[in-house]
View (cartoon, one colour):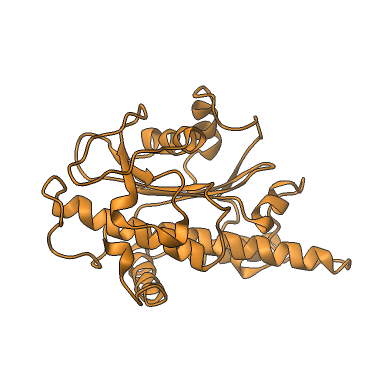
Amino acid sequence: MNVTTRIAPAASPHPGVSAEEWQVRCDLAALYRLVAHFKMTDFIYTHISARLPGPDHHFLINDYGTMFHEMRASDLVKIDLEGNRIETPGITAAKVNQAGFTIHSAIHMARPDLMAVIHTHTAAGIAVAAQEQGLLPISQHAMKFYGCLSYHGYEGIALDLDERDRIVADLGQNKAMILRNHGLLVGGRTIPEAFHEIYFLERACQAQVAALSGGVKLVIPPREVCEHTAAQFSRDTDNRMAHYEMAWQSALRLIEADGAYRT
């Protein structure tokens, strides 16, 4: 499966960076800016990562301290699964947040099917993460995740590498997880799919917080309707991936004004 889109130049401007890696860098920088555009950031905290093609199991993560809305392809740090920075000629970004490494390396180590991983601390995501019942199937957006959403209990700031095993065990084979009292986590086989997952999960959490604030009894569809809707979202894999790509290309127009993310 092709795990990149087609927004990058044909060749990298840095001699030490392959065209394939530069493509992923540009896509990931665009994803950072789109997350910022939709106000899913938490200052310089939270992270988005992407696995690089090849046998080395390297992945890209943000240079700690760079704001999401200003992220560029050359601001991304290449690291291995042990957190070691991989020297890249022409790329000077170097700072990696330890908690971000713990969470993202856990997924990249255990789930080779997930090329991109997004973790957010939005107000709505944290609010639902703090609610005992978790995500309720009260919106079409939420029903996308019916029966395929995981939960991971809060253990403190994710600095203990031992937590990686528990994160992976709790995620299982799902692509989306609520980190209790913490935030949201999604993965995708491609960057467009990961963007689509976090967009829907965030919107579902926003809808739930708004609905609960009304103080009235909620309407929850029957279980069979929830299951049917979830199945509608998950069927036709090829068409679904094409849809993610279409939505991604549309979203890119929101940040294409100066194309700075591609530098």
